[in-house]
Length: 438
Image (cartoon, rainbow, N blue to C red; front, side, top):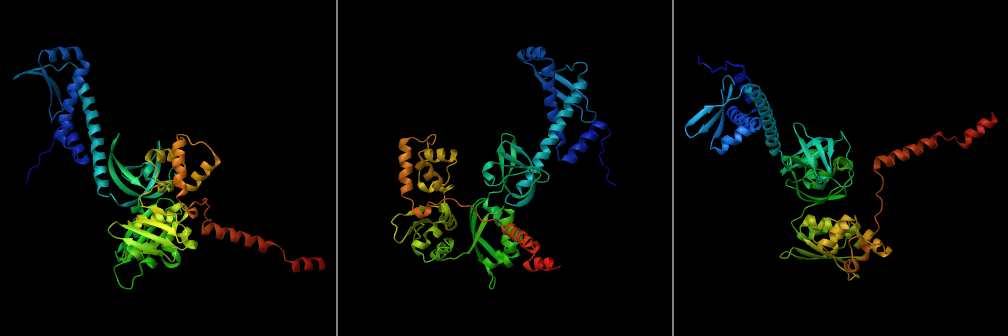
């Protein structure tokens, strides 16, 4: 029978147990304790330490791995002298405790980071734990995820203990060390939600070829089926829209357009600009550019509110789109890289950032602000003329006032049910006549 080396002292047994449970190297812990011992000696005997250092002496600590006994040595060349002060054992024990606890915390954090680094790009369920400035701290199981403002959905308001589906986006170096970054605004989250709700997407029978998203507002996805007889759009929508509605509900009512992917660039761009019809396209594959002429009555549909439809179409197809009406000479050029509506005006970075800070993100709101004559902080007369010139180039059909969305179907149904109940409770004229006769 093979013999085993069994630790026979409390110190060694405790050290080995902690090392094996937490995945820490016992030798590395001892080396760290030794360095902490020298630091503790230097703090408690600063005058003597400085004198000896000036005299060319060096210091080292020794720990008996079996008993845990600690000693401090003064070194010079090959000579060493034990200078352990009386009562240093108590200091050594306290230092060892602090070092071991610190190493345990570091090892646990490293293990958690390592575990979640393998899950980058995966969707998990999380719970809002607390707010750290503008960041949202989310409980994701063994660890905590940080959701910075750029990864949040602008229209969402987060509450404590609220459960959310989130995407493990990245492991980043922050001021507090390596942190797990989670996201609600990443397009990959929409893809993962469809994989959960649609078996055909999960089994790869239906593939999401491209996705363009403006988080919290609208998303366009292009789908393609690799199997005969499988309708990619119908599979994602589901019977009576149940599958796509589940995704919409999880994203807080974000609108989702599902179109069929096509290898034909013209067909793909036409589908991406739906619901507009009767489009005439001229495509340059070399320049990745498409010029679209739209019937006047379809121009507002093709452009969308605030240019959103054409902007998402450009992102989805990866083509620059120049769109105009048949009788309107004004052309709207969209690259798909725009973050806000005002980005399509082609303003300088300085002017654009000032408008964003002033929360003037809509073309309509910006135009109304300028018409009213109200001063925009940080915008001078020269910049104002530049903005006005850019606004004049935008087709008038695109400068529209934001309108409120219709209420969700469940609220509309509840309202109708309430009205019906009131109608049923109201006595009919026949009932009133019968009561008078009686």
